[in-house]
Image 1 (cartoon, rainbow, N blue to C red):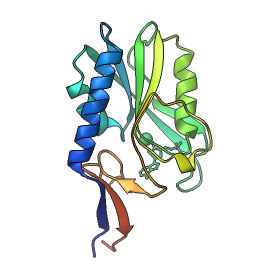
Image 2 (cartoon, rainbow, N blue to C red):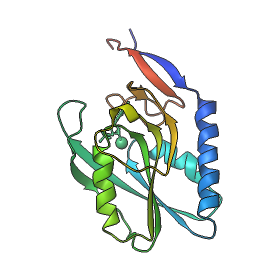
Image 3 (tube, rainbow, N blue to C red):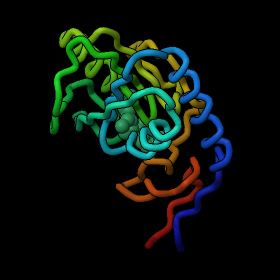
Image 4 (cartoon, rainbow, N blue to C red):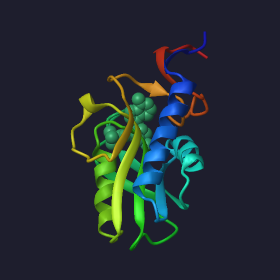
Length: 177
Ligand code: IMP
Ligand code: MG
């Protein structure tokens, strides 16, 4: 049997919301260049769709972090596997995240980036599970608030699978293949 996945947020709904988010960024940062920082790998799909719809100049960079913890629980002890390629000093930075859960990983990343003296620093996320928050994170914008369920698709994985689903799905039942 295959894993059973049901649609939580359709492709059309996600795309429409990303377009709105891009329009807001284009208006808020008018006259500037916005520097998007994606957290690999989950945020890649969201970041591409967002960047394509932003109408002001955009530059991109990526970091990769691992958060140590027991099972699915992150600990807040974060290791940088890949740091930024370019300096963010004096730049208008938006950190782009796929999903905000406990907030441990993102709050650590935000603290490090703040110390590098960007002109401005905001955080946006496609999905937020507010019920799960342990460490507060200030968000400039959220795509969708979702219930405390494990979701996949649009960059989000279950054991590295399903990142390529064009919608946000919930794993209802795990298969045996
Ligand atoms: P946090 O440090 O607990 O906020 O961890 C957030 C990270 O956990 C996200 O960037 C995702 O990589 C992962 N994550 C949290 N919830 C989910 C989910 O429902 N599906 C897939 N990955 C998730
Ligand atoms: Mg992530």
